[in-house]
Image (cartoon, one colour):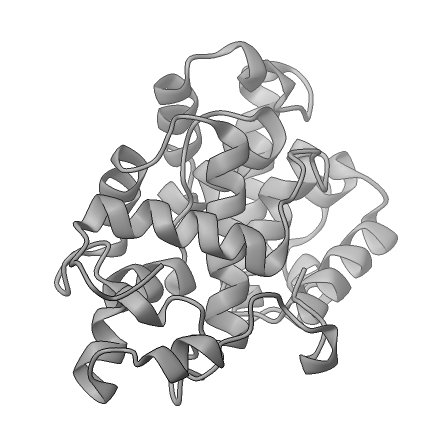
Length: 252
């Protein structure tokens, strides 16, 4: 990859995928969690570290036993159990509302039926629930059911804007559709694009002081061009081609 010819946004998106696939290594599409856990854990994760989210989830089920117990729990006690999250007093009733709706509509605490539903129907059903936005719904459908959707969190959104895959004023909500249109409708590609850009935003393309010297996207990145000018042959040659574990553990 050189900086000789300008790339279109779609070309930048595809180059981003190819380069970060090599940089971080391709991931399988094996689900990391059950669908119910993915949904509730993602609700707990809002503005919360992964460690605090995991602690809240564990305390919740240790205290109340199962989803039936969580639903029946006094809301203040549930809020106390998930107190390591950012907004436990908001999340506790929200989780109970979600569980109540799933039980009322499905007769049990399961999301397995979404595997057989069309993607748009699944997105609509999930986002109709309180506190479930497009990002959370997309995470569940992509990670658990290999549906062709693309979750766009703050890291994916930031990188897409800095590189020039989307415009600087495009919202995260709008970016879900724009980026998805630029990628193959292949769940494995979409999962890798999401996870790799998530990692990249947490480890390299930071909100403040991005580590541009280490970034393998610099040859076509608008942010790099604006701050440093065209990437020189020397800068490109010095750019790492693979993530080095000596730099630290990758997030979950």
